[in-house]
Amino acid sequence: MAAKFLGEPSKVVTGSYDRTLKIWDLRSKACIETKFAGSSCNDLVTSDGAGSTIISGHFDQRIRFWDTRAESSSNDILLEGKVTSLDLSRDANYLLSCVRDDTLKLIDLRMKKIIGSFTADGFKVGFDWTRATFSPDGQYIAVGSSDGSVFIWSVITNTIETVLKNHSRCI
Image 1 (cartoon, rainbow, N blue to C red):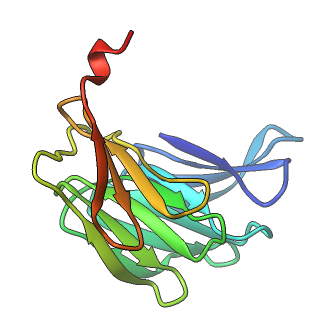
Image 2 (cartoon, rainbow, N blue to C red; image 1 turned 90 degrees about the vertical axis):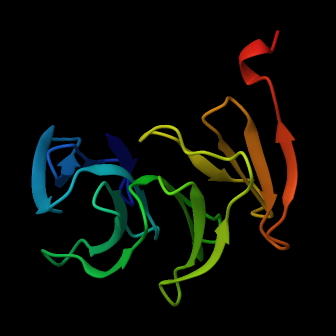
């Protein structure tokens, strides 16, 4: 369901429907470690350049934090719906999570706490694979809604900046 490079070009971490995370060595083309998450993983990010921290989002409504040197996760965050996507801010201080309860959650990774929630009239997370993302400068977040609209919020003010309509009719 998800794959990211893990600190170096020769390692990849994957998250799967089979409730595992796997770390792969691309040189040997083999799995070198399996972490049992206990729930299907829909997305993941790596939060440091060294490749020692993995953050995974799951169908059981949890975001799990993994130290690659340990077997199990620690400091899980429980949300109110399935986690459909994760995105990391460029400075790696903030995590954006798209959740099936029709919200986006902003998490400060230094405290591992939710510091913001984004929702709007008409915004619906329609699929388990709905993706949300930070803008390159981290000032905005964007996500598609089930009706084909794209919602864009300001991270600073927690307000809607714009809603782009008629995605399916774009020429």
